[in-house]
Length: 69
Image (cartoon, rainbow, N blue to C red; front, side):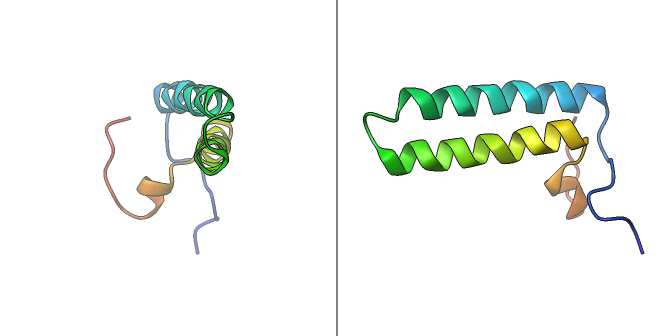
């Protein structure tokens, strides 16, 4: 059985996910005064993408979907 959350992306994918996480978290911060639920969903998405970047793991690849990075 494969280890859960095993590394499946390289440094390029990790960098791309880290940048996407930063954009999502900044978006959550900027939209907080407009919509709490939008801000919460952007923030939670950003934290998940940050987890992927730090772990070197991609949820889509783990499901068998081919990604570019």
